[in-house]
Length: 151
Image (cartoon, rainbow, N blue to C red; front, side, top):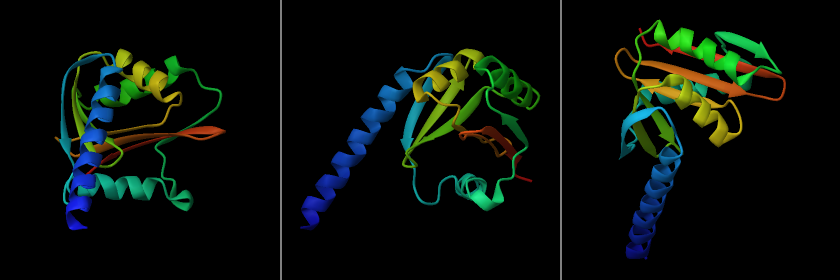
C-alpha cells in the first residue's frame, strides 16, 4: 500500500513537471528558465498574499479596470508597474507544486504569450529581491490588478 502511494506520488510529480515544461515551451520573451518543486515552507509570504487577494470579501486591488480592456492597454499598465520597480527575473507557480524561475528578456512578448495561452488575463508573478507579487484576476466584468511589496 505504501509502495503504491510512493510510486503514484513520484509519477504525479513527474507528470506535473512535464506539464510545466510544456507550458513554458509555449511562452515567448524568455531568455532562460529553471523548474523546481515547491515545498510547504517555500514562498510562504507569497502564498499568504495570494490567499488574501482571492478572498472575495477582501479584494485589495491596486487597480480595477472595467471590461472590455485591450491586451495592449493591460500590458502597458503592467509594464509601467514592473519597469519602475526593476524587473527581469520572476517566478510563476504552476499548480502550486512547481516553481518556474523565469529570466524575461521581452516583457511584452512574455505577457502576450501568457494571455494567449491562458485565454484570459489571469496571472500571478512572484519576485524575490525585494519580495513582491503581481496578481491579475480577470473576472466577468473587471480586471483586478494587485501589486504588493513585502516590507
